[in-house]
Every structure is written in C-alpha cells, then in structure tokens.
Image (cartoon, rainbow, N blue to C red; front, side, top):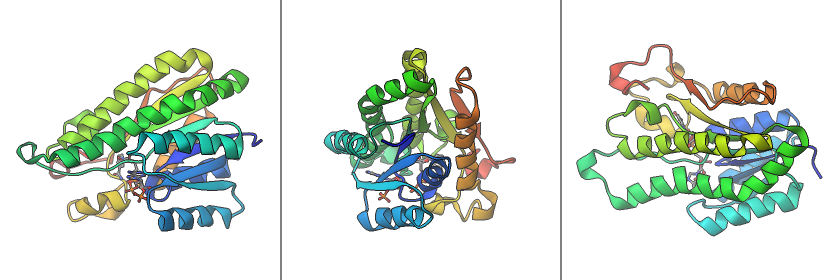
Length: 245
Ligand SMILES: NC(=O)c1ccc[n+]([C@@H]2O[C@H](COP(=O)([O-])OP(=O)(O)OC[C@H]3O[C@@H](n4cnc5c(N)ncnc54)[C@H](OP(=O)(O)O)[C@@H]3O)[C@@H](O)[C@H]2O)c1
C-alpha cells in the first residue's frame, strides 16, 4: 500500500495535471483520470518519466458508474486515499436567452454532479485517512466565476457557486473525521479552457497552473487544526472587459 495517495479528476492537462505533478512530487501515489485516452496516457507518461507514481484511468465523469468505478480502481491500485481533487470541468459561454439544455446539462454533470458523486464514493477512504493522520483533503475546483456573477457564463458560474456551497457543507460534515474540504476559486488561468479569452486577456497576464499547484501545497502544509473553506485567487488588476476575472 502507498503511504499517501491522491485522485485527481481531469488530471490529463491544465490545472489538474499541475496539481497531480505537485502531489506526486510531494510523495503521493496519484491516480489521474480524463476522458481522452491519448491525452491522459501522455500526461501519465510525463509523470512516470520523472519517476513519479501514477496510474491513469479513462473515465467520462458524466457517468455515475464511471465515477464509482474510478474511485474503486484507485482503491484497488493504491489501497488508500488521502487527497481527492475534484478538478474536471467544462465551461460553455452563452447568453441566458440562448441557453441550450444539452450545454446546461453537460456543465451541471461535469462541474457539479460528478464532484458530488466522487465525494460520496471517496468519503469512506478519506475518513479512514483522516482518522489515521488527521489531515485528509478534498480540493474542489470552483472558480472566481462562482463569486462574481459574470455575464455570458451564467450556467458555469452557477455550477461553481454550487461547488463552493457543497465544499462548505462537506467541511461541516467531515471536519470532525480529519477531512478538510477547500474550494479553490481562481480567475483566469492559462490553460486550454481559457483559449476563448486570450484575445481579451493575453496568456502572459493570466495566472499559471503553478500558482494553483502552489495553493494545493499550502493546503498540504497547514496544520490539521487549520481548515480553509475557500481560496480566492485573482489577477492583480482584472479589468471590466474580462468580467472581473
Ligand atoms: N483555466 C481557468 O481559468 C480556470 C479558472 C477557474 C477554475 N477553473 C476550473 O479548473 C478546472 C480545470 O480547468 P482547466 O483550465 O485545467 O481546464 P482544461 O485544461 O480544459 O482541463 C479540463 C480537464 O477536465 C477533463 N474533463 C472535461 N470533461 C470531462 C469529462 N466529461 N469526463 C472526464 N474528464 C473531463 C479534461 O479531460 P479531457 O480533455 O480528456 O476531456 C481535462 O483533463 C475546471 O474545473 C475549471 O472549471 C479553471
């Protein structure tokens, strides 16, 4: 059995891969999951090439069963879970009078429903780890969009506001078992997801995936007596043309 283990959904690129690398470099055996197999395997290889412990599991998190199977496969591989990172996410911009139900359902399914199902499935393992060493972690990727009511991103922002709320309730339920839950709420980070915004906000003015991994390192570092419900991370001077992000 590994000494510490983490599961990162959407760990095949962007923020998820940066967090997975940081956790692995901090001594965690890591399971990463994603939808596209080629991209996921390349990400796993990039970690394994640096002698980091990684398993890759293809899982489309819109399926409840796929999430159940993902947590079960993580348990089979590493035998424990100390840190769950609910990171998989999608954002689709639309005016409110133009919202298509298929886009609404997809964002709710990936950003919120999957995160809730993964938390449910992972809770017994996290509690066990928390009771063992007092510091199991759930890191939920919310967004500053969940706090700022951005135009055009109403559905995305609503899912992220719900993630912040769910994280707080999770903390209240699991805190006494040594499990802390944090909602990370970044503004624009330079990843594939923000390609749409790079004419407005150049990539070199966005936060980096390393900034987000640094936030996770901070969560790992604080004592078990320190719960951090949310971390809001914004660019120093977000303009009105970027919706405050
Ligand atoms: N980038 C930002 O500015 C920003 C800011 C605040 C919050 N966030 C949040 O941070 C998280 C990561 O964002 P990112 O910028 O790193 O995005 P990204 O580069 O687009 O990566 C998204 C990840 O989620 C996975 N994913 C998407 N749909 C999935 C599905 N149905 N099943 C399984 N995996 C799925 C992707 O895998 P595949 O490629 O295989 O689909 C990929 O690994 C998201 O929750 C996002 O909302 C991002």
